Amino acid sequence: MLKILVLHGPNLNLLGLREPEIYGKTTLIDINKELMGFAKKEGFELTIKQSNFEGELIQIIQEAMENYDGIVFNPAAYTHTSIALRDAIAAVNIPVIEVHLSNIYKREEFRHHSYISEVAEGVVSGFGKESYFLGLRALINLLSKKAKK
Ligand code: CA2
Image 1 (cartoon, helix red, strand yellow):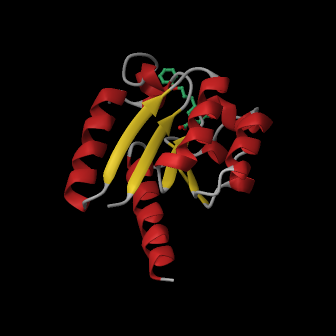
Image 2 (spheres, helix red, strand yellow; image 1 turned 60 degrees about the horizontal axis):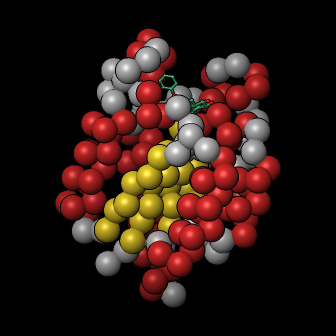
Image 3 (tube, rainbow, N blue to C red; image 1 turned 90 degrees about the horizontal axis):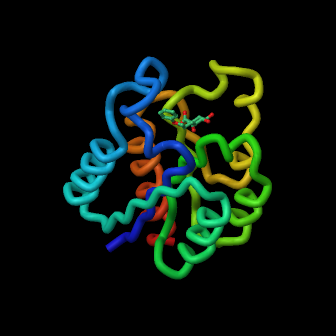
């Protein structure tokens, strides 16, 4: 059975609780419940983690290589700042799909650049919580193609 990690970056624990006009009313707990339901239906093993700390996210990514087949990652604001996270992703040999709730290219200029995209397998941005499901779908397709090779 495929083992997948969904990783949420900083401040995403505030989803639904603050700034609902930008990020909607759905909480991270709601999204996580739906993601677990999706995993059950599709038949893969899902672990979900969230951290507000850059170093902890790096640690989780490094350790993920031993325990998971791939990662769906919303690096949140670290997308636009963190060479350290980019290096961690480049160093692990499992695929990482970058996802964003909002379309980062429709927003402020400083969100238009991602340090993560150049080392990610692909990017899903702008579909709200659906971005996570699209990211998971893409990762599963990728991993099952690899398994057949
Ligand atoms: O659209 C996304 O998923 C982002 O990764 C979200 C980040 C933002 O910095 C990125 O540019 C795009 C922000 C996540 C913070 O979420 C909050 C939720 C509720 C209240 C405040 C922040």
